[in-house]
Length: 292
Figure 1: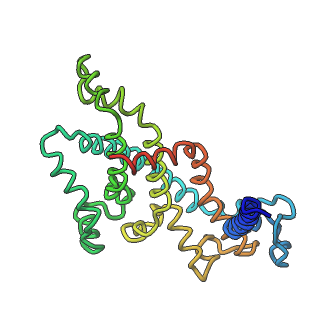
Figure 2 (figure 1 turned 135 degrees about the vertical axis):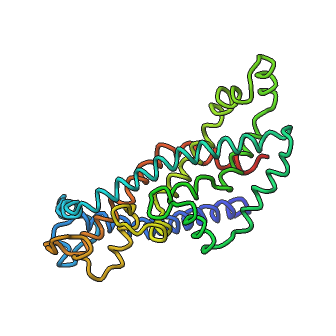
Figure 3 (figure 1 turned 135 degrees about the horizontal axis):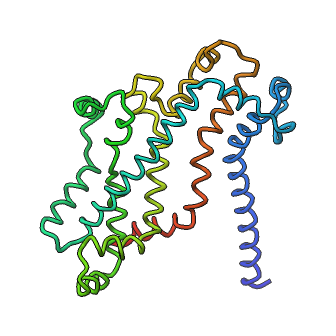
C-alpha cells in the first residue's frame, strides 16, 4: 500500500469523524431551542407527565392564548417593535453618514476625527456617568432612552467606513466631473454599491435593539414602557409566575409551557429576519473588515 492510498484513507477517516463531531455539536446546539418550541405547542398532559422529547402531541395553542391574555405582553411587543424599527433607521442614517465622512481622506481633519471615533472603542466612562448623562438629557422612563444613547456604534461605523474606502475613488472623480456633489455621489452611487455591508450593519443594529433588556430595566420604571425582553426576564426570574403574568391570578397551564411560549414569541421574529439578510452577511462583514 503506497503513501497516496494511506493518505487517502486517512483523509476519509478524518472527514467522517469531523462530520460526526459537527453533527453532534449541531444537535447539542439546536435541541434546547427545539425543546422550547415543542413544549410551547404540547398539551397540558404531555408537559405534566414529562413526556416531551422530540415532537409535540399535536399543535396546541393554549399557552400562546394564555400569554396574550394579559395586555402587558402585546404592549411590550409594541414597545420592542417601536424601539427596533425607529432605532435601526436612526442608527443606519447616522452610521452611514458618519462612515462616509470618515472615508473621505481629502476632507480637513479626517485623521483627527477618525482618531476620536476609534478612541471611544478603547475607553468608556462607566455605567454611573452613563446613567447620569441619560438622566440629564431627560430620557429616563422613556423609550427614547433605549434609542438615542445607542444611535451610533463605533464598531459598525468603522466596518462601514472600511467598506466605503474599498470602493474605487475613480467613481467619485467621474461623478464630480458630471457635476455631482458629495451627497449626490453618496445617495446615487455609494449606497447602491454598499448593499451587502448595509444589510449586515442593519442586522447588527436590529438584533441589538431587539435583545436589549439591561438598559430598559435601568432607565425605565413604568412597566407599560418595558420592551418584551424585560418582561421575559422578569417572568423567568419571578418565583410568583402567576402574579407576574396574570392580573386575575388564574392559571390553568403549567408554568413551563407559558415560559416556553414567551421565549418563542420573543426570539422568533428576529430569527425570521435573518434568512432575508443572510446572503449579504458574510460578504458584507468580510469586505468591511479586511479592506481599508
